[in-house]
Every structure is written in C-alpha cells, then in structure tokens.
Length: 515
Image (cartoon, rainbow, N blue to C red):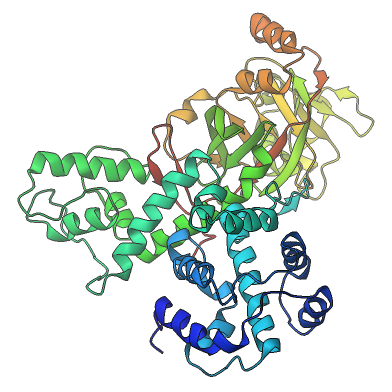
C-alpha cells in the first residue's frame, strides 16, 4: 500500500505549484466549459456555489491557502465522521499528492479549483444527509433529504472565516447522531492504533485475570481502563453494561450469547455504527416540523420523532426469520377501531386447515368466521374440510372483534405492496422478551392507543371511547381517516440508542449485514 502523504505536504506542494497559476476570478463561460470536461461532479451545486461568490476563486487564491488546508484536513477525517475519503475527488488528489499531475497553467488551476469545490460540497452534504440511504423494499414517500442549502452555507462559512465550524453546524441534532458518532470515533481510534489486534475471549471468568475480556471492554468503550487491578465487582458491572448494549439479559455472566457478541470483530461494530449514523443523518430532514413513525426491525422497536425529539417509543413484535417484516416508507391513511383479522391465505391453509379438519368447532371457539366467495358467513359444519387443501381453498377466514382478536382493538393502515400493517395484539406477554421476532411480517404495537392519539390528534375522542368501551365482541369495525397522514419508515438499522442515550448494537436477525 502506498504511504498516505500528510495533509500539510499536499498543501505545500500545491502552494509551490500554484504560486504562478493562481486565479482570483472565474468567468461563467470558463466555469461552464471546465465543468463540461469533468465527469462525476455535481455541476448544478458547483455552479450555484460560484454564482453566490460572484465567480471568485476560493481554494487557489495567492493571498489565502487556509481554506484549502482546512478542507483537506476535513477530508482526511472522513473515517472519523463515518464517511469514505475516496468519495471526494480522491483519485485526483492522489495524483497531486504523488506529483503525477502538475498544475501548469490557468486552465489546470481552474480544474483543481472546481474539483476542490465539488469535494467540499460532497463531504458537507454527506455530513448533513448521510452518504447512503436505507435499503427499502418499497419507497412510498419518495423522500430525499434537502433541508439545508449546502452551497449557500459553504459560501457563508468561507466569507466569515468559519469553515472549521461547518461540520458541527451541519451535523443533525437527532439524539442518535451524537451518541453514535462519539462511539464510532472511539472505535475508529482503537482500530487505527498500530498495536491493535482483534481480541477473542474464551474464558467465562469475570475477574481481573481475564485480560482479553478487559481489553475488549476497553476497545468497545465500555470501560476507560485496561488495568489488571480492576475489582471483580466492578468488572461484573461492566459486563452487565456490555450486555445492555447488546440487548441481552444484564446479569454479568459470560454465557455463550454474551461471548458471541463480545467476539464480534471490532471492524464489524464499526460497520454497524457507520451504517446507522448515516441512516440517522438521512432521516433528520424528514422529522422537521412533522411527526414521523420509525420502526427498526432488528431492534423490534418503534420511535416517533419530531423536531429532533422522541415523542413516543415502544417495543414491537416484528416478523420472524421465515416471514420477515419488509422495509418500506409510506403514510398512515386510516385507523381501524375493532378490526377484523382477515387470516392470510398461507396461515389459513397451513396452520388453521389442519386444525379444522380435526375439529370444525375451532371456528366458533376462536371467534372466527368462514366466508364464501360471495362474502357471506357460512356454517363451519357445512364445509367438507377434509376435501380442502392449499391448492383448493375457496373460503376466507376472518376473526371477529373481541378480546381474543389477534389484532386487538386497533389497526393502522398504510399503503404498501406487501400487505403488512401495524396493530394492537391480544398477546401482551411477548413485549417482555428481549428478542421479539414472532409475527408473519406485520408489526404488533406495545402502546397502540398512545400512537392512535398522535395520529388522530384532532379526533382523540375516538381513541378515548375505544379505551372506555374496551373489548366488544362482534362489534363492526370502525374506520377513522387519518386527518394528518403521518410518514412511516420501517428500516433495518443495525445500531441505535436507548432512552438513556446508551449505544445499542442489534442482532442481525435477518442476516443482512456481513461480519
């Protein structure tokens, strides 16, 4: 691998080369001509930048090389921000570093000036919005972050000599961003140390003699010391803290599940933090001036964000590995009170049909109804269940309303091609578990009424009435249109924080991220 020439040296090289070829003014014609000669560049943003500056050069002025040095330093810090330095005109800068490309005239300097501007606009945009958007199976919002005018802000910070403060100004203030960024920098620092080695813990002893354990806890940022004189009682508390971060039972015992998480390579943890940080950057603009529902599948958790605050959070039950919950964006369009559960065809034929062949009375016991193709309820004893199969099942089975209804008292509908929705449940015990992957793809809510109140803020009486009446058997469903169609995001985010600001690493339950 070629040695990375220090930032101060590339700036020195450029200063020597550009002392003759520096330019202070750029004509719009020259800018347009040079932009047409460069590929993979944000031409619109670059043009906007220079038009705001009255087409003055910024990076290659004889009187001031400070901006250039500051930008190059920011680019060199990209990994600490969860970004990739190679995204920002890296090949071009590499040629300059190694003096394989020389600036010999005004045209060369103009191209260098424009490439520096593109790198600046790109890196500051990534600091604001993230360098990758979440992978989505369906994007019903067609959302693209853009709540900051990056060219205008870059011009303003250059003119006021505040360029060093621009990264902090652009960083979203969502609670997750700060906490994850701090942990990412710590782990990045550990990995970049020349003495860094991946640690494998084999001993299950929680005492000062287990040096690999102490070292790994330090690398993860759980403890601030690698001293072998740490008291056993304190080490147990630190193991408990690590278990909380891995969403495991915090008992201080090194069971196989805890060892497995502790032995995940530090570079894999860095990947989790990097992906998560950029996802939250991407989310930030959407949450300004409106409430946004975000379900994180590996966390099996829901949060409602608005203006950088969490208005509501709750545990969720999401899809099991064989029937995963899909990722998507959409908008809540209606709230169903006392919903029917229309049993999906696959569940009806694979799970209910074998039971009904043995006991048709299960229909009545479970408060189900059998509907024919005309939509009429028929007597379950009039059906020849033995003659039916997965390829011959001309009926719809639905569960009527009541306390035993699988959807509980409330259902939230939002358009998506997967047929999934969010709903209450009659089985509240599953929310007590750390691992909550049990559904056929839909999402069960721990606090459905609280979310219903947020969605129907101008019709809260509907939820209040629902709470007062409770379970009503065989009550016809009531559809309440959502007066404010709240955005919904269901994503697969590998890290996050809890209500105390603790960084959490989630199990890769669907195996979407390689280690």
